[in-house]
Image (cartoon, rainbow, N blue to C red):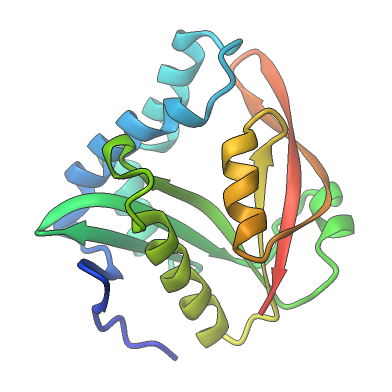
Length: 185
């Protein structure tokens, strides 16, 4: 099992987020989550999701949850990205049908600052995610991505994920349709 030791990927420091990081993680989440939302989703719904799921208090909960891993990517000490992994597939029947390689780990969130797009930060963070999931003895890594987020889909495909099914994601009054993508480990 990985002991959480920080490793370097190019100039990034990649490792476990700490309880002292929760405010910075929440700030980064508030800046990056809207970038992945379809433009048709009202800003009030995006803000409500951020308040309910991406606050400093929620990040403290995520860090304390033994079924979750929160990774941080820093460049020169500045937080440029984060990822959240969750053991298993949850209780969504659509996910259960799509994710047939088990045990599995969900890549619940992976976000990098907009000014770090194209820098290799996302690839470095994803490499750390894959290493951590493999170290947990999972046989696959899966995620949900909005069907209209072509940029993210290209990134995941380039990094070994394939389309495995679909699931729904409720964002405010909207029900979004996400692809389920999977990567064997």
